Image (tube, rainbow, N blue to C red; front, side):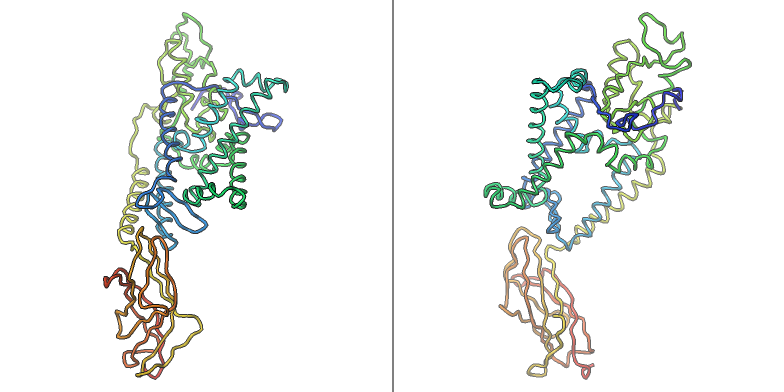
Length: 473
């Protein structure tokens, strides 16, 4: 553990001051190797995020999360309410995947992939630097009275933030109601779609509130993942860590003095420049060890490496490392815990793959009409009335659809026509009668197997119950 004096250890949330009020964070603009990598990753992910709702594969939106109609598309593959169990399995796979990477690499998802971090640090924060300047200028502007300069800078920033929030809200809506529907609403205008426009303004307000005021509090207070990592991390997890063994040594950290032999004096390599604190977007001191506020953004690594290079000391005082690596110089190992999570993940992916191959393109459901008994027909035939629903999950119409009995001799009669068309990504429903010779019935309640045919080709089967009189048992 670190040799930092106990009275210097931060034991409160960095965004709350001693009076219990909000302490605003003004991080220094980061720069360095990792920041360049993060920018590349972030802008690539942003491009995917903004483009995904407008990409079509076989007529299907690339990603769609239509919760209202319970329709989902994953990578152009449609999922209907009948496939919800597949969506649940995919969600479980996602959770296990995040858990696995958290155990192995800490909160790397938050720093590199999380949309909150990407938008905050790579979009809104960079606009803030452009308008208000770096940390020092922002601090002076915050203390400055509301003169023309402050009004101009703050007003411009807030207007741009609102426009970007409105754009994000539109993209968010495209994921929910589909991009085609969104473009149709935009073409028609807000007056024709008041409820949708109000929803859009609500989403805009939420995003504007988050990125203008709530900011890093999302990661510190609202997001449960920060708490989850405390349960998942162990001494072998690779995280953004301060090498306290090297940074403190025998005499602890101390300010840098020119021409001083720090090794001879027993002072640690940490020169107490506070650059790692000033650059942190959540306002923590990484030298206090692993903290729930740390999102592994690597800004402190770049800042520390820059200072180490300036004073001719080795880089890596703050780096990706495990506690075991710092204490014992141990290398990363694929622990039994990681093997267990990997095994579970592989099994779940295997189950999902198998279910996807077994998934039918057509879903059929035939149910007896509630409250209706059987009827005697001519030629000693028994008739039951049913409702049916056929769901077409493909991107092409299914034509000349007919329903035929497979398990019994008899006839299936549709009420309106002998055949029907099931539209692409739609459904057909209606009423039908099933007539079976009384001699073919063995009991009061029979299970029937019914085939769904298209152009005389069997495309799906389903079952239903058929009622008959007791005398034919």
